[in-house]
Amino acid sequence: MEMLSCSHLKKIYQKQCVVNELSFSVRKGEAFALLGSNGAGKTTTIKMILGLIPKDGGTVERQADIRIGYSPETPYFHPFLNAREVLEFYGGLQNIPKKELKEQIPMLLERAGLEDSKTKVKNYSKGMLQRLALAQALLGDPQLLILDEPSAGLDALGRVEMMHTIQSLKEEGRTIIINSHILNDIERVCDRGIIMKKGNLLYEWEKGKEVRSLEEIFVDRIGGN
Ligand SMILES: Nc1ncnc2c1ncn2[C@@H]1O[C@H](COP(=O)(O)OP(=O)(O)OP(=O)(O)O)[C@@H](O)[C@H]1O
Image (cartoon, rainbow, N blue to C red; front, top):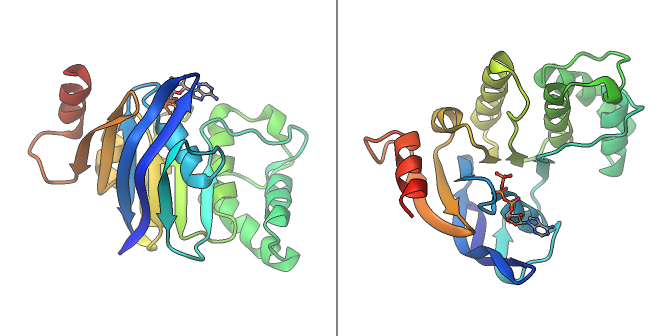
């Protein structure tokens, strides 16, 4: 069953087509990767899926009445709040009842590898901000998670932990769309994905379909065009 389907998506910035007739679909319960070098159009695609920016063409269809959690590429939170306060604030925006939030927040912080401390966000490292962004994305128990470079800024151990967390979220039956440059991680966690270059779809990857590693396929496709 399809959770989300993009058809002929298009985005033009300053007369330049940065996403060009992009079509792909994501099945329920799978982890799907958006891959491509810098500037390929991955984040722009995510923003169109979420309706954060208008499309210049194409359609996005998704299963009705699903909750979506989104962790942005460059998370920004109010600098003078601590992690719990940030989650209370975002939970409030989602109209999650206070009692429910009180139960959810400690679990979400633990899941993201953060402590419920008084440390303010302005003193957070980039890795801690990424973790908080994941906790924020998990508010309200979303069925579809869209994670834009969730490992960016994490050290090696943090990356491994993040991938374990994403794997366990998938095992719970959530559908996950990940934008990442770390191909080894993607190969481990994701089932399928697409490789993009300059807004165009170059290759549809599926785990186990080819003997070659994802990295080999990526270098072949990105380097060869
Ligand atoms: N608001 C904007 N105005 C003008 N051009 C933009 C805007 N946002 C993105 N672009 C351009 O669109 C292209 C695609 O950018 P996008 O951020 O989607 O790429 P990406 O694949 O996510 O790259 P990265 O891996 O570096 O994050 C780039 O050339 C970028 O400069």
